[in-house]
Image 1 (cartoon, rainbow, N blue to C red):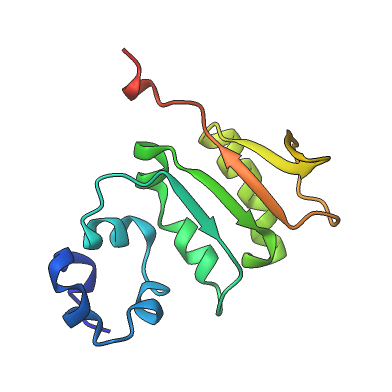
Image 2 (cartoon, helix red, strand yellow):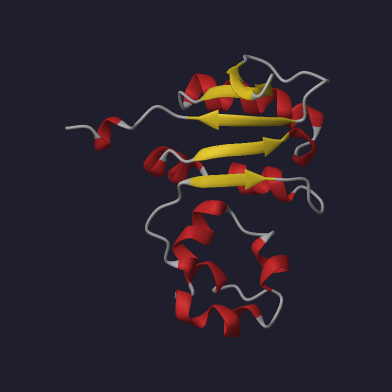
Length: 133
């Protein structure tokens, strides 16, 4: 992988990837990918099971985006090793103020823990104080 990949301007994406953008993107931190792609804002992230620990790496490197943009996160717990699922909830809810929800009876309901009978959770953050007047 090119060492200058995270700093590459968006218009050089195809050349920088050499035709394998998905594989290279899986190795990056989200904060680096956002800069690399020139995104002004991230509103929604889907973290799905993938090769290796891609979901874990993505969230580990997403702190700046999570603080700045407060995106909603749809997380399949299979995307993270079980130990990481347990640390994800306090990290998002306690540290960053996200609220955790699971789909029950046709709607998203607040919950406080990952359970064995559910594998997909929605995390939503209250609006950042930076966006309030």
